[in-house]
Length: 235
Length: 368
Image 1 (cartoon, chains in turn orange, purple):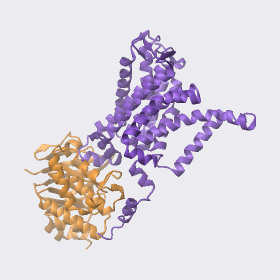
Image 2 (cartoon, helix red, strand yellow):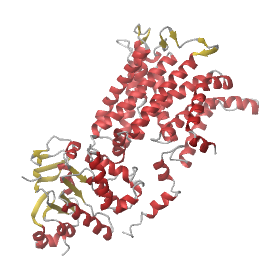
Image 3 (cartoon, chains in turn yellow, purple):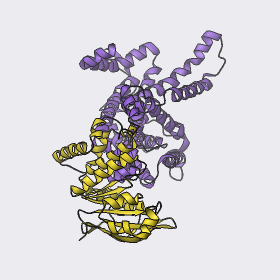
Image 4 (cartoon, helix red, strand yellow):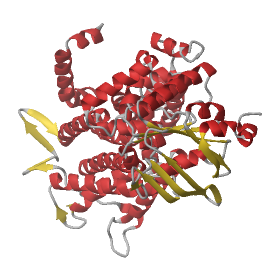
């Protein structure tokens, strides 16, 4: 049984069908990427999984259908999101942002421990803990968004374009962290435009085009696929 | 230096403040005249209203331009249940909570259809809601006379404890105490309770959820916050305080009509919040005090003109709103964050202190 199983997911925005029958599965402990060009429907797919947009089709998480559940209820079951454009709470401090990540949790000791863990992962956030998040650099905000998502101690972490708009050094740092999180056993679904990077860190991948999955397979094979190389790896 | 002393000795500051608040109506009555004691009562009413709206606008970030509707509902519930209009004369301690609760329910009714709206769109819908309530009150006098239409409802019962009514003049402990004085103390108690609740709400789990929704709704939902319920709760809590203030207003004034609950009133309450410092309780209180006292004080411009120029050149009623408007414009130009802003808003508008410098420096990502 897959941890996340999406069957025939369809999403309409008015008359436009943004996601046209997507099937995908993520096994427990895997790092799977979903790559594709701008507007392919990657973010919409994540929104559908989280119940943030109206959709048809089946989404099963840990064997249970998520149909009809509100986003907050899905989050409480262990699905965390690092939103596109980071989505940090700009006027709250770094510490308050991290605190919000643990909103659904009641185990104080565990939250404390996870806070230390996040500060270890990102010492920069500890230095800046009293600053408002809106005054952080883009890379720091991305660290905060990831740290905040980890504060919920997720079983499944959905990452939406974590490399977007960041300096190369910062992208490298963020990707090192993503791999570290994956090694800790968290299951990850990584949405990226930067196909090169995503295929390098993931074990499997899906290629999305105009709202549908066109290719899927082990990341190494995808990276070697002539079609993928031509369309996404700039060759 | 004085502030430093008070900071070191908070007990002394507290005792002085309490003494000042208790003596205030007598000081004001002796110094400025009886009518100013009534102004003082209105100041407290507006502090309650502004703190109520601040929950919706300041905490949860939902721009509500129809807040006065809840004020009206609270006032009308009081008038219906404690006046000769329906021949009902229920005691105030039963009527006030009813009015506040009904306003809270209407807060949810307004909130439900607007859950997906933000910013300008939300402002327009709430503005419409405020007007609908006022127009209903204006027209519900036929075929069944519910609100008595534009004439309003008269002879509303004053607040009474047992046989002791807040009307006329009483002599207590050798002091001559008017109804305005008594209402001052009643309103003061409600104001302090409101401040207490507003402070506790801000620091609570729900207060943090409001802040998260204000900043980024999608992220807030992904954190496990039930955005629908939390937003409705903000509307309901704000409306409840509006309804409470409405009931107090009806009992104090003894007369209400739809005219008291127009759009300008909503905008004034919103101005109090923005002028004082959105989301920050001391700022909101100061905003309410200033925007209630200033228009009253500006009424005396006629006297000043007579004293200086020998005659009244410009009608004070005209000049009053002009000066008031100019003051608002100047405020927004030179102190857009409000008079007493919260720590974050201050920093957003003025990057001066060392923390801000550090923040500015960190905007450059080069050091990895």
